Length: 289
Image 1 (cartoon, one colour):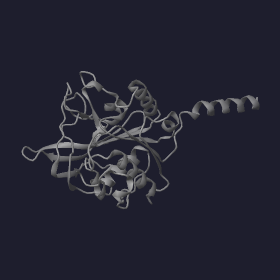
Image 2 (cartoon, one colour; image 1 turned 90 degrees about the vertical axis):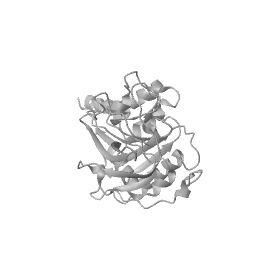
Image 3 (cartoon, rainbow, N blue to C red; image 1 turned 30 degrees about the horizontal axis):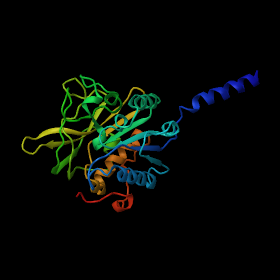
Image 4 (tube, rainbow, N blue to C red; image 1 turned 180 degrees about the vertical axis):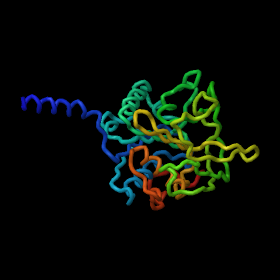
């Protein structure tokens, strides 16, 4: 009897092995990018994020991995959260889109987090149904509807003095950073679903910006979702310019969001990362050309 019980336990552990993740491990996936030097720089930005995540004193003990192709099953299984950078949502840009979305579906079902940064929040017309349906809407709570979409049109424009204002909610991702002004491209009119573009009840708007200057309207530029599968999603439509990773408030905001989606407790004063040497991560240029 004891022997049979031991055998059952071993079989159960084997069956669960493929569903386990490593606590505090962040998988950063970099998709294709065609922007010029100093703009986006997704591979350099990914390396910078890995550096910051692993060098944090509080919370410490985090690990991160950067890949520039669709991750392997082992890499998927290891991730507590997956972060995307690139020209629109990389799962739709790498080959074998159906497989990629199925992989993400399994990851999300086990409670894995998901983060999209700047253009990686974007979906093209061919990625979504005529009514705007796409799994990313549920996984992350919203997305940037690339111009040319049938159902909705977001906009992309560089503002010299975009004022980024924290949301009113008490939320861990809002800890440790304050309102800031930055030259960047915070997308506007982002899509949160068919309900008059109001976010779902489980979506929290984390930051807004009054734009454009000639006809200001409060636009949501960062948001998060607490999903029913216990997973978490975070989307932020900055930074466009690589040099803006030097902005402490923006960097704290993004790192908070990444760690929160991994289920990591955010310190009461937010994460505190030292300003990294932007030249150290292989960017084609720190300054936009």
